Amino acid sequence: MTMPDDAWIAETAPYLAPREPGRTDAWTEQAARRGGQRLLHAGEVEAPDAVRAALGLPAGGRAVVRRRLILLDDRPVELADSYYPLSLASGTALAEPRKAPGGAVTLLAELGYTGAEVVEDVSTDLASAEERERLRLPAGGAVLRLLRLTRTADGTPMEASLMVMPAGRRLTYRLPSV
Image (cartoon, rainbow, N blue to C red; front, side, top):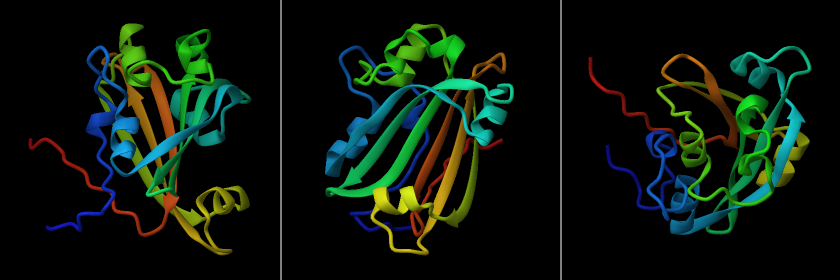
């Protein structure tokens, strides 16, 4: 299948591998080719229901979140919120409103947490008022929602990411053959 040269194709693998020393994170590398990303917020919050369930948090459970706006040619193309259990992220660079050297995956690996399993759930919905504003969508605009849960080899949930992008985006998956 041929894709247009300007297509923004989402692939999971680059976001799951720790980076070599001195190399920037995968989000920044991909976005820098034609856009960028803005860190909107970092810190402790009450986790939304889907994240709380994914991370196995109790009702009202809190997590560290890193909220980013992803840009392509200076247009907002994605809202990406990554949530981490407090036991992993509290007191680390993940909870601070600045870049984590090498990105979150590298920092987590340095802390002893490496992703071994990823589960992604994709759905569609109408954009909320905040999503319409941030993504510059018209009233009634639809979005694609992706919830990605990453677990360690022993099954410990280490990250739940909620990504929201305008409908019409293409997601490409490559899976190992069995």
